[in-house]
Image 1 (cartoon, rainbow, N blue to C red):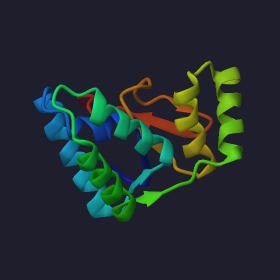
Image 2 (tube, rainbow, N blue to C red):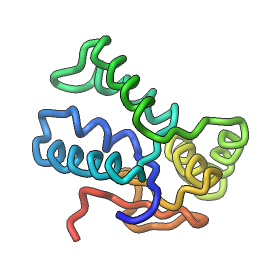
Image 3 (tube, one colour):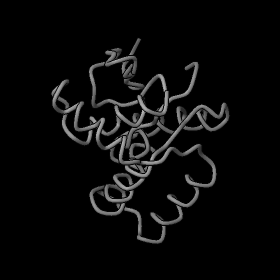
Amino acid sequence: MIGKHLVDTNLLVYAYDRSEPQKQTKAIEILDELVKNGTGILSPQILSEFYTVVTRKLAAPLTLQEGYTSISNYIRSWDMVDLTSLVVLEAVRGVRDHRLSYWDSLIWATAKLNQIPSVLSEDFSHDSVIEGVRFINPFKRK
């Protein structure tokens, strides 16, 4: 994976989801590579969604303290981009013009306005491009 990548929530969650061992192994491998290369980027939206899922929705959820520690570690070790009013406005345009869900559009708008060329997510069509932002499903077999 060359270049910078905005990492969607599902990739982070799979690293903690023991009910999906193959995806967990792959997610950990990808996240380790992104950290090592300094190419992974996160946003407050992604971390917020991550916290909710890993502390409430996993079969074996993290404790609230474990969730806090994970968020703290991500903030300290990953590049972060802010959620701004312009990102929200662009996301609303993405809903209108591209028929994305609001939350998916917020991911797209975050990448677009921060000039991040790709998003790693399984929630979009693999290898699709919207206004210069490419969506890559890291779990898709080549």
